[in-house]
Amino acid sequence: MVFMKGDVSAVDELVYGCLAARVRLIGRAVTSIYDRAVEPSGLTIAQVNLMATAGKIGPCPPSKLGAVLQLERSTVSRNLERLLDAGWMHAVASDAKGIREVGLTASGRRKLESILPQWRQAQREAGKLLGEPGVAAIKAVVNGLWNLPGIA
Image 1 (cartoon, rainbow, N blue to C red):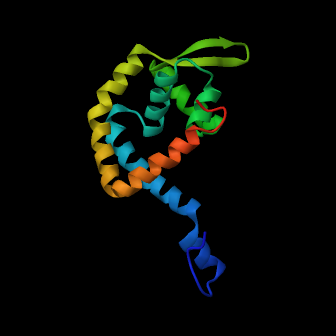
Image 2 (image 1 turned 120 degrees about the vertical axis):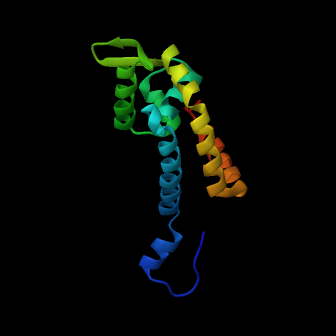
């Protein structure tokens, strides 16, 4: 896909045409909206998403949460540690090698319910930032990602 025509430098092409840079910029802007909204709860939006995903798919290995959310193992581990310590998630199964499955606790479900008003406000703000076509495009792309083999 060509975004610029004519004689442009590599710098210009990368600055003005790089989808990765633009998606990351959008991601940081949207994440900031949600993080500010849920900050009083002591959570980040990354932790909220981890909890909600665990609540949706049920007890599962941390690696499955990482696969569904497209997160690196270290990111999942770091966020899980905080959520386990707070009692919002629990180790359903573990052994000498570590945690085998995690799940959302009743306390975690209540925590998610308690932040819904702030999350909904952030959702409205993010929707305004992205506009209806942007929101629709993001949903379509994510639906395609979730249909990848091995991701439920």
